[in-house]
Image 1 (tube, rainbow, N blue to C red):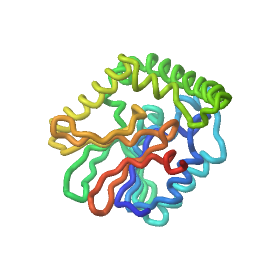
Image 2: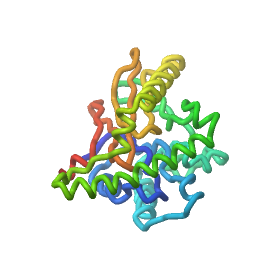
Image 3: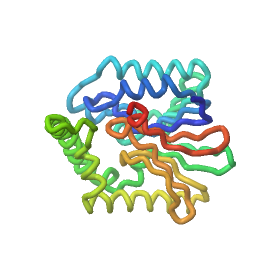
Image 4: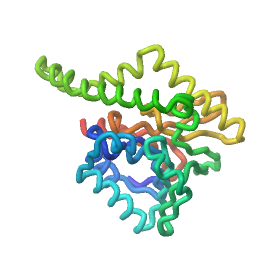
Length: 247
């Protein structure tokens, strides 16, 4: 498929849980005039704890650079996990690849969107980084438990993948409250800055909804959900679930 723009975030290259192979399959089958990488593409936090870099992770970088060389406009918005790039912002790599902390995007209908990873609006990441890192380690633990849970499920004949970490995120009261607050704060910022909408990542939860007149759009992640946010040339917005594409 060919789109006006594709937005992806939270690929977390450099971790064992990055779905780099699935992301490569996605960008192989989907083209766009603009590709927005909305933060946490490279996981500097995880690499600092333990260096892990698979060939598929290098293939993702090479594929993105190849797209830039062929004329796709690439915008890499930094996130908290790839914050090591922030001291050097803005970075211009050729005519088609720009690395920056935030951007604005005009939809096909002329609406103006604020594009940010989202960690600047996360009070824990901003003020208590040690707690954010601890939470990141806890998230890795849940991802490891996913493998055990799904192995047991298969023994009982349940072959469809089920995510314990996603269940916790969607159902534990404190987690649901954090996500709601995060979405509301971003929408309020967009409204105060006279934007029509917000495009972000960070919380690994793909979503499109209206919040007090602001179009909130989250591209999700490529650790569990394998989702992307796209805009067609007709101005239609969609969330693509690449795991469902495999069913």
